[in-house]
Image (cartoon, rainbow over all chains, first blue to last red; front, side):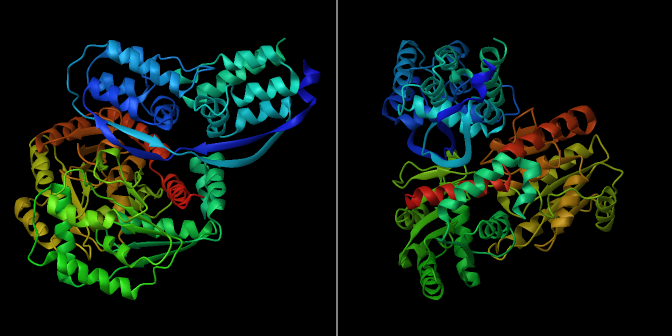
Length: 219
Length: 397
């Protein structure tokens, strides 16, 4: 395995990164029904923002709810069980924001809560601002080193955003590894990581690196 | 200068700012507001504009002018937008329009991107000749006095984008994109950087405060929205149990003619208590404010209405537990029980102040969490990047 680490890739991997400035979507919800209506109405970027962006929230509080909908249901509607269900919604490959939207609507529609929230849920959407980090991996060894040190914004862009928004059916890392090195097992393991359940950005990086370690260094 | 932030925010964060700024190279940006000093907006611009220039963006900052009558009108706009109550003098809209026209004719507004800050210069949009215009609203407009909002909305709708400090302030009756950008503090400024303990003590002594006895401080204008009378009441409740001192540190602002009246009301409420210091410091008293915040056992921002309340982040950055009013942008900065306490009444403020005075460990734990919360979310480098991104997206670049 060690030889392959230094083998030059056919196509080097260029690392981009993105920030997602939040934009008010123009409506809010104070009940579950209004929340469902909002989820039906908003664009895919809004689903991404509320479900996956909390990875970057950088809270000083240990966060046991992995997305904004779940946090609101727990804190403002006071339904912990429903909040847990919404928090644990599946976001791994090959799912997109549209699958997540469908699941959310299904779970919320089955809930029977007539309560009105203490504070409204403000629907927010976003537009990505993408930039080239100018870091390029010409081999797997360089690739792993860059993953270990690059901005988490770059990891999220390639590993989460482009796939979940529907630009690609697979995350950029798995795709590059498969296309350049034919390492399907490593590619699959990366794909099996569900980014939706992470609320600590560095934990996501750590788990990605663990997969590289297990598949490339320990075998 | 900008490289100096790397040790606080990390190389990756700093690199993102340089990379995003490249998208705006060769373009011109103008910021316009109503005062060169005093208040949060002038303070942010005094840092943000040089940083934008350093990134290679041609950036200018211009101030509109007006007479006392105009600023009385804009103050009444400010109040009625924030508290929902009408306080309009006769002919207010005409006076506002007159000064927009004067400034619109006097100022060169031909830039690629123009950021107009707050309602005072919002009407300048009528004089746009080119470029993309962005209205940056620093105050709470979620529950405005409708006649004033309807008047201003006529101008705001003409902007390409709007920026509000929190989603809570966003409006359902605007069609423009409303970006959500909280303001920020500069950790390297005289107001926020580390200073020696002896400097803190020297300044406290200068203002006749005893550094060896607990001090509660609130730094804000003498403005009813900041509830100076509530602060006095909270202090008096604490005083029944502990030998505390109160420093209410205000500063005059050119666009706030009401400040003097509220100051006099506060003096009256303070009575003859020698441990209450009501200070009206000149706008450049940053070192003094730094010392007051660092020298305090508890910092308050007991606003009943607030745009954002940057003094909260200033104090959190200095590892102080903060007691803040549960309003505006304060709940974004204070996580109740984690880095401070959110309160609705002087009695609650007094309760938590006393608790913090008695619990050193809790104070320190909350203080550490507060600094990290600010480091990650409320530093000027984050706001700088946000402005660059809003300009980029508004330009469609």
